[in-house]
Structures are given as structure tokens and as C-alpha cells.
Length: 243
Image (cartoon, rainbow, N blue to C red; front, side, top):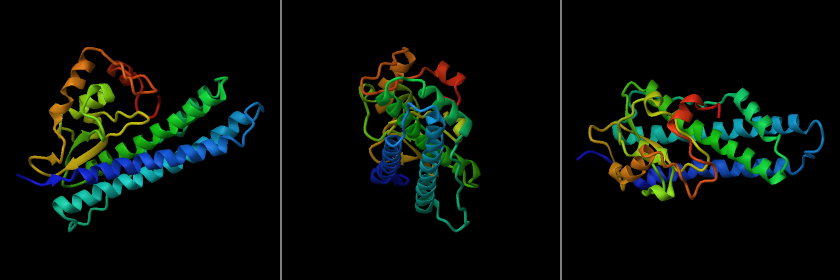
């Protein structure tokens, strides 16, 4: 049996990314509370705040993801080759602007805040996922990846498409083959392994078969999600960074 990746290492990383997301959402909320949204210039002011917060949150998540990758790599294959990893925050400022201006058209203040915060969460998780795949793409030792959900093994408690990806195990080599599926509140970690028989403590890909079947059945209900699940067809028309 090969090296079993400790579940605590994976969970601490997932919790760290979520902590970054929450901290920056709180920062955004404080900033928005100082802006009079009734003023004609409010939209541009909010856009400036969003660009700043999303850039900072994405950079923090990307840095943490790289450290997670390199820490695990050091444990499994060593660091003698001097590989230092890379970051890819995956941000498209134009997409942030488009989404922000669309949200600002809403009339309800609480709705505006919640939707802008969701965007911060999305961009934070995107930076984490993309950085891990970018590290793998640049790594001469080329790991395989699996998606490991943080808290759920059942379809009723999680995104069906996340569980679809989790049910496949360590089969992904790049972000292109895995699809960088991201949503605010996602508790998944993208986990690399250099082992011939990759294993994560407490992770069995078959735990997610039920969620995969629900996805195949076009059942996208998510009782615990604030944002409806998007079908695979929808995602193909909305690449990461544009939704």
C-alpha cells in the first residue's frame, strides 16, 4: 500500500480557503456599508471595491493552494529537484465587472450584498482550484488529481456535479480534463497524488456514486445551496470566470 494522504491535511486546506473567502466577504460588506447606493456614482465605486477585494482574496487563496501542493509533494516525492510551484488566480477583471454591474441592477440592498459576496466566494475558490492544476501542469513529476469534498458523502448535502467529479477518483491530470467546476460555498479540495495507487484517508470515490446518478438523471435539486446547480450543458456555455 502506498502513502495515504491524511484527511486532516486536506480538510485544513479546505477550511483555510473557506476562511479566506469569509474574511474577504466580511471586508466587502463593511466597505459596502459606507457607500450610498442611491448615488449615480455608486456603481463605479462598488466595482472598484469588488476588483480590490476579489484580487486580494484570489491571491491569498492561490498562495495557500500552492503551499498545500508543495507541502504534499514534499511528503510524497521530496523537494530535491527544486520545483517551486506556480500560481494561477484565474481572474478575468472584465468578468468581475460584468457580473458586478449586473448585480447592481437589483433593487434590494441585502440581495446586492449577498450576490456580490457570492462572487467573491466564487473567485476565491476558482483561484484555489486553478492554482493546483497549474502546479500539476508545470510539475515534471506530473501528479494525478481527485476532487475530495470536505463535509459530505451524500447527494442531499452537496452539489451533484461536485459529487460526479469526486466519484471518478484520481483520474484527472489537468484542469482541462477535470473541468474547473466552482461555486460559492464549495467545500471540495483538489488533491494531487504522485502515488501509483492514490489514497486519501476517509475518501472512497464510490461514496459519491449516488450524487453522480442524480446528475445523470438531471436531478439538480440542492436543498442546502443558495445558488441553483448548473447543468453540464450550461457550464459548457459559461467557462470559468465568465458566470
